[in-house]
Length: 284
Length: 262
View 1: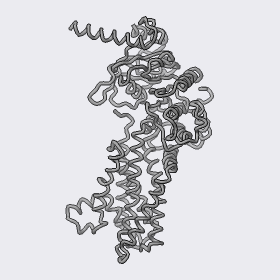
View 2: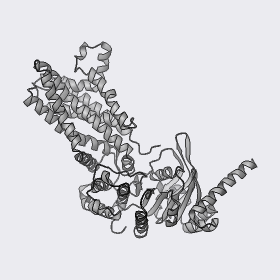
View 3: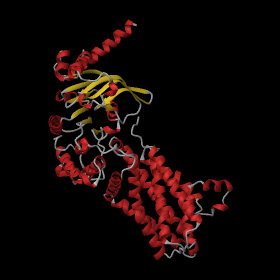
View 4: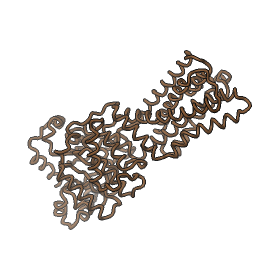
């Protein structure tokens, strides 16, 4: 049913989409999807982590990627960012194949563990990453403004001169997030950005995400294994054991499954999938 | 917001193999990291000096031996220090996720490697200047050739150390392993480089092995400067071999940096 929805949406939203999937880099502006996957498979060592996923992520919205730990969320995000090896199938990001060099300035990526230099201050960390994104003397002033704004975005202005290694876990992950906000990316890929944060901070970050999506038109893809975060997303990808279980809005998921919460909807869908799997096996 | 700061998205700076601005930014970042770690800087700069002083008085009654070993050590210290520092620093970069982040950004692999080489090259210059100055003017090391040539060899040795460190860090899963690569990679070269006994007097098999180890040429280069007033053909050969090895290993190191990882 979700699949049907998704194909209908494709047609309704995007009648101008060219039929040849390989030509749409030239038609970037027509592409309503920030990410489009078709038969996406990823293999890590002997294990297939992603099993032929088909999904889309709409532009300018917050899409939540939800599922239990170890279901392949991080691998999927790494594939989208272009750092995952052994990925097959179609995966287009902002109208280009994932991992295309031109995407490196257009995507902001936050890994699950904060990837910042502990032996630099918050500002020095951001200064360096800003220089990588926008190098040269001519850009110095713009870089300074970008860095100041990014620090302000994550509410760390009073900690600008603190060593990243001396910050708390939550503060360090916000430094990592600030790095991704440099340079106004079109797509923000955030791997469990709110894990281990206190409720106030979590609320503040979600407000920031919504603010970024609304005012900057940024597409956000946020993973989480905490189901109550699902309600804060415009759209959800529910994932389990390397497969997409459902792809819809939180409201539609609840209505469709006749449940009160996304968590209940998820459990309902898991039971359904398990039952369907059993039925298939007995039919054999 | 997009309309006020579109500069980055409108004209994304291309990723080239090597960009001067990104390389210097990386070098500045590495040096800034070190500046927050004054103890490491002190150890890097002072330990070679202390060793030279120690050596001078170990060979108190035979200054000739001190001349020989001292000059060799001026080439070996920068190699070992930079090997250790680089292997740990790049290992940290790999394990902390910053490498993955950088390679998902428009940073060329060459930028990263050249940045490290540049930063540690600067440290190596300071370290070598201190050690050479101390050896020459305080401890009375006798050098026939130019001090500048000593510094040149020391700098190339440091680059070789940086290159080797960068390369082996790809094969180390932890800091424990990275440190163990020191004896594995450096000690055999130390034993065979002619520091303890001239290479020509070793077992022929060992001599042949020492012929293909870069440290042999690093030490030989130092000894050339010590004994000859002008630039000898052997010195030029030594310098070219050390520089070539450093470059080769740096390229191998670049090959170990993967944008896509499993």
